[in-house]
Length: 296
Image 1: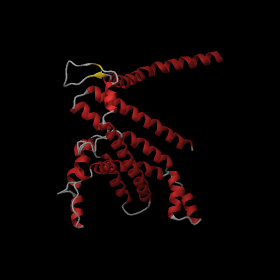
Image 2: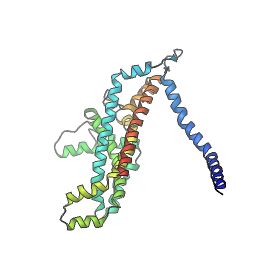
Image 3: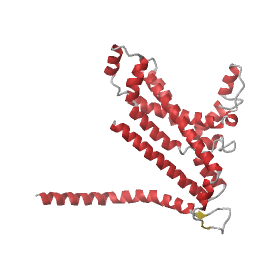
């Protein structure tokens, strides 16, 4: 009887593998072929403006890339952009989640309005902020500055990276709010009420009950946002085009410049490999962070 069951398990396992094989094979091809082509082109001397000069370049593209100050400026901008947006969205998301958890008139409408910016396309969001909010002559912020007797600020000239951070944070703050507000729904109100009866104030309840309860949700928000924020492109392209100079050029926009403006496919592919390695390092770190929080 045991042999029959073992045989049945084996046959069932083989049948399951045969059913999964086409989908797994297609997924692997879909992932590995573009990655393999990127690595291959990164080792080639391939510039579309210089036909006939193609050939194997070895590590020349990587050597040029790592000695180019533009790469380090772009990586610095990328890390500053990601870190600033994460800080704004996590802190703002926690505070807004606590606020919207309270009972007040029109709470349902306020929740919908607070979450709605997340569903605006990045290009549309960038255009709205560029032409309606941050315009130095006709923008809402310029009008507010005039009301208080202050000079208008040309945001994209004097504070370009700060402007991008504000636009991206406005887009991603609703996402953090949605995740954290959902996590707030599972907070044990009896525990909060017991803390109030023991004399705990609002700050004590926030730091010792609410924040520990939101720790896992905060880890998920950080992981998901960081993966997407590493590839921010549309907001930069629409508003500043990476300028002035390289002031708002991140790693994704630098690859765009090399590939579609300089037509250097080999150098752009090397930049793509660097971006893949950076994204994987960040992903490994974040997965471990989330796993540690889930275990605790």
